[in-house]
Image: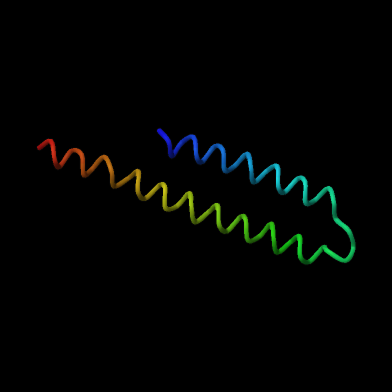
Length: 67
């Protein structure tokens, strides 16, 4: 359950940060902002992938213990 809430919260935070960064857009910081958004996106993809792998393995371990 917590992984679902965490993924929803991370998507909301990512959208808020990306909208905030895109709304600023000063000329000198365009490259830095794009790299920041890209880094946050990669981090969220890795975290969601780890959460998916962990949630996929967890029920299998529980069914193995029950059997």
